[in-house]
Image (cartoon, rainbow, N blue to C red; front, side, top):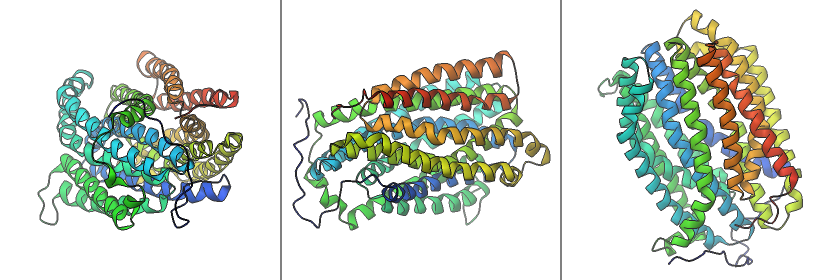
Amino acid sequence: MGGNYRAPRRRLLPSPRQMELRLNTGYRQILLMAMPISLAMLVPQINFITNNVFLGMLGEQQLASAGITGVYYLIFAVIGNGLNNGLQALIARRAGQNLPKEIGRLFYNGVWVALAIAALGIAITYLFAPFVMRAFIHDSTIADQVINFLLIRIWGLPFLYLYVMRNALLVGTNQTRFLIWGTLTEALVNIALDYAMIFGHFGFAALGFNGAAYASIIAEASGLLVIYLVIHFKGIHKTFAFFDQTRIDTSVVKLILTISAPLIVQFAISIATWEYFYILVEHHGPRALAISNTMRNIFGLFGVFCWAFAATTNTMVSNIIGQGRTNEVLPLVRKVVRLSLGISFFVFVILNLIPEWFLSFYSQGDAFIAEAVPIVRIVSFALLMMSFGTIWLNAVTGTGNSRVNLLIELVTIVIYIVYVYVVLEYLNLSVAWGWVSEWVYWLSMFSMAFFYMRSGRWKGKEI
């Protein structure tokens, strides 16, 4: 094995009964791809919110601790998303070239890469997380609670990473309608086990805060099992010749890492800085941290539509470039932006009309809600900015220029870190001003991605 991997020349599919891998660029195609992705992304966010609603019933401290544990795990989750996005761009490119067996090679080798990264994430957590958390979290009770939770929760990584591999396959090949089965299973199992394991129902011991960790791991494993059963019984594994692979192909692994590594670093840095933000918020007290945790839930719940359109943009841009239709890229991106911005504006209106209703689910009282409402309004504006910023950034991903994605992220992160440190630590302003950092983040990212795509320097990139 080894050497430089090059995809074979495109060829026609051997039979008209084979699934259609090439995409068009109409609004109907965009929605047919984006809506199932939205639903699939919505379910994990419901899981996060369910965890926090149940933990909020245990007290404000538990809700505060959940903010730090959630963002920490999210760091590793988005590393998987970075691998997913890179693999998705490669699969979509091969789909545009009508090369189904090459898609199978990419998926098989991507699974082994995912498992290796998951093992590394577990090792890093056990070796370094306790030291880092005790060094930066002021409240020792919260620090201990966070550490104990993470040492359990991190074992969900292998299941999560294999789970996102199927995302790359199904989205990259326009099979998004199958996404819901795994995510629906995960949601139902997570909600049931949260209730059972946190509070001690249905014969389970009451595990309290750590019960959410065990419930999430079992839910991720359940979702993974179901989606791979779907892939098997629908015969998708035969279409892409998964079982023709017998060993790891180092040239394919190198290609996957070349495209994915900058995205993995980009996503990890992005969420790591969000963890830094939460640590600075913790210095303002448990109430500020608990409020910020609810903001993360709101951001995650309503951001799924933006992320779904972003994933759609990545896949469709790569697919039509694979078809040689580069002149259609920018018009396509503009269509996706219109749809994403339209849905986000509807969410913006709802959030600003009834913010108290969303906050009431966390059982924290009127004073908590009164402090949180202004921040909800700030977050709602950030969602509008994300609705177009993330689309243009994922257009860059679809071109295969993942190093440009990383550069854009690095510049944005420097601006973001300086802002949150000055506002929250140096000037000691309110947490509301801290959340304005989301405006800074998305506007900075959008401006660089937009001008890069408009420049046309991405044309001619081969992957």
